Length: 136
Image (tube, rainbow, N blue to C red):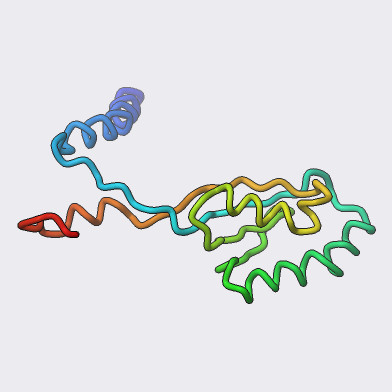
């Protein structure tokens, strides 16, 4: 039984290597633009009652204004933790960082965000037929 488990573990470890070896070297994936930023925000420390007042009186209305202006596309709460997740319409991490730091909790340094750039799924380009001449 141990040998079977070791064999399975070895096979799973080698799958990424085998997939990489099968990728054609002459056709790298085309670059794609960043068009969204995934922002995962967490409080730096548990919020105090005064910080909750700031949250309800300023942070939420300011966040709603960004949503209504089309800057924040989607927003969620983290179910098993104290934090939020935004999908931001921005083309750079810097742009999203500036937007979030301007919010009251950002100005007060009460929340920290992990910012992850997102873009179109570039492997889909491999499914398109090759054009006879480059697009202009």
